[in-house]
Amino acid sequence: MTTEEYLKYAVSFDPDLPVRVGVEDARGTVDRWGTVPRVYIRTTEDHTVPPALQDRMILEADAATPHNKFVVHTLHSSHSSFASMPDRLVSTLLQG
Image (cartoon, rainbow, N blue to C red; front, side, top):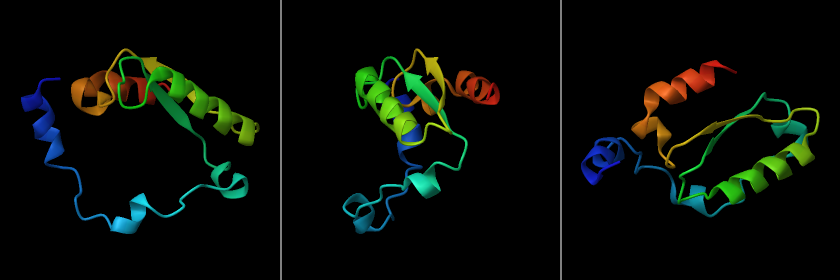
């Protein structure tokens, strides 16, 4: 995305989040987190969360809740596929 395209989305980000959101322990527990069906959209051109780290997060989450693994899809997109290719993202999410 160009900077101009990105800025259209950046203005909608919520700057009013409490400061503690970024510093408090917000890890889920196996008992609670493992009960919600999950879909992970891997983004191959992501420089914020590189694909290798995405794969590790998926692997560790699936190991923690083997009864409720991610359904994984891959988009050839940057980190912000919701902004750069919203139609493809929605189509992918609708696949389940």
